[in-house]
Structures are given as structure tokens and as C-alpha cells.
Length: 165
Image (cartoon, rainbow, N blue to C red; front, side):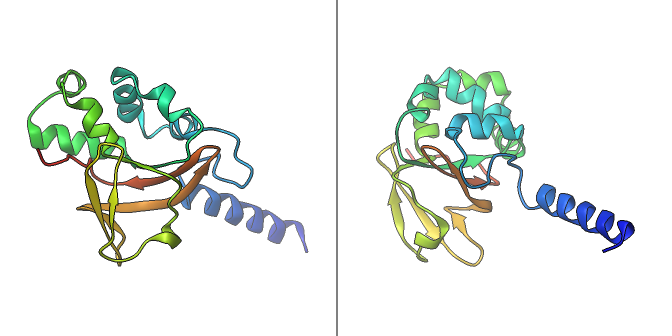
């Protein structure tokens, strides 16, 4: 293979690796837990701040396994706009921990385990409904699935799940 073709192939592989995932640590053998994997991605700053404020970081660094439906920063921005509040007001909510627990399912649930219409009980004690084609958790679309961590799996979603009261 000539140098020009080799360079093109290298650039293509690098481009594919950047565009297929927001996580640098999603390759097999990932030794980072769910929290560290999400923080390293850089697009979950609000989620990380909320987990810290709700005192849930150590829980999600625990043994698990856990399945986390992780809303991006953009998902949180949309929620803040919809609610007409600031990030500080969101972090001060009394039900913040409950909202975050609604994004966590005990056990490791991969996309291959999902069935259309299935209802999955969250750590908050309430169920979320899964739909397929496209894959959704309630009304949130799964934009990236099956990011494995040492203590579970992350599915990136485009909206914050807010449990009904």
C-alpha cells in the first residue's frame, strides 16, 4: 500500500472513531466506572454536577452493575428552557435525586436485551417504557447505546427523563 493510501485509511479510521461515539473509553477492556466514563466524555457536565449535588456519585462508582440512561448537556439545556429555570435552580430542587434515580436501572441492560413495549423498573421505583425503531426510553431518543463501563452500561439519551408525580 502506498503512503498516500495509507494516510487516507488512517484519516478515515480516525474520523470513524470520532464520529461513532462520544466516548474515548468505549473500547473493550474499559476499566473506568460509569461516572468516570461519562465525565471523560465531556458532554455530561450538567449530569455530573447533578450527581454530585444529589450525593449519588459514590453509588454510581459502586460495584453495580447499573444501566444509566445519560442525558447530554444539550438535553439538560432543553429541560431548563422548558421549565424556565436555571441550572442552579435545577440543582437546588428537592426532587433532584429522584429525577436522577429515574435514569438508572439495576443490572446491565444492553440494547440487544430490549423489547418493544417493555417496562423497566428504575432505581427510583418507577418504570420507564422502551420502544424500538427508533429506540426510545419514554420520549427520549437513545442517540448512542451500549457504552460499557466497569460497573455497567450507559445509553446516551437526548432528553431528561422526569418521573410523573
